[in-house]
Image (cartoon, rainbow, N blue to C red):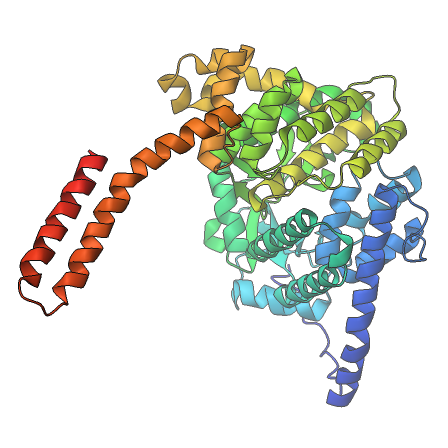
Length: 537
């Protein structure tokens, strides 16, 4: 049996001049392809025929460009492939195959990374050189440990960090060029997305971090009926992760699942339950639930793979998300606006009346079950266009919540009629509300009742406290009140001004040269201190 991949042929060493010329051509070409991908996505989502005189790429050309560029854009495609509400069947058909068509790394690169990970004495009695899955960060191979234990070995790609850094520079460059087309808040959101993605993608390329994420997941979610792979820490490193070999059907292969008698609607509900537990109860969640990472065993049990992208939510963000979901379901626009501000998706200075109007219009669109997905999209984009000057933004800590939510919602919208993610989340949240609120539920017994009924008085109190905490409190005063306040403030300030004046006079007198200046200075100083003490008492 083979213990390792057979060595590949010596790689051809390019002449330095030729390599430099190729690099000069490749980078501008890569920038152009990145621009055309983002340009196409923009046109499709905004339902426009052309922008800057260019039409969108056709489906096959879009897929080819994404595959050519690799890691960063493949991650983007995984999200896009779930959005049947934006993309036509022709585009979706191409985007959904991208995950299965990522080219494996060259044999020479595999040999280098395998030796780096396992040295000259690898632990396997057999290692399949053909990858069973090839992804943007790495690829997975089947192998056998002593005792005929079958495992999956994930090996990261050679020089992946360099490629990621290059793509991030391209994205930042494109953002800089197109800054004039975006509002300040949109620019800030895009910059936050790139910054967060830069941090996460580098962490995802480290198999040791993925091992730790998997370990913590198994520890935290052992009570959930979802299969999480076992891991072999003694054989793993920054370059490779050794896990149990998991079998199952991809969750988006609905025909195969139905042939096995598995109810797809119940399956989506299981995913929602698990992610509600992760994001709203525990605040520790898997950020990458694209269909390639969700398998279904023959008995209907979910299997969750790939722990490179895992995020912990700050406590205040998690609580604000609970308020947000509840307010969205109840159409409680006061609490919805307050929750948006707490989450940071709306600037603290945003006009509440306009944000409330935006929410009312969007909710009325997405709650109308008589509208088709394309009609909803068109109406929603009209609303967004009419309110493009509102100060919406995207904080870094919310980015991956939205990504995971978009992927999960995409499962529902692709295969279920009139799917409503918020409607499905709420019963799960209410059932787990005590655990989700934790200490707050014990310290404030009425908090659960508040989240259930949210009476007007408590909503007002909560809004005031929120505004005070984020510095956005605004007070409206009439002219009479202003005049009264001016008189009172002047009365309060007079002794302060007098006290400070006496102390300054003492400082001046201390530097004088006439007889008795020191005594007079001390008298002024003490009088000033007494005046200040009297007014501050």
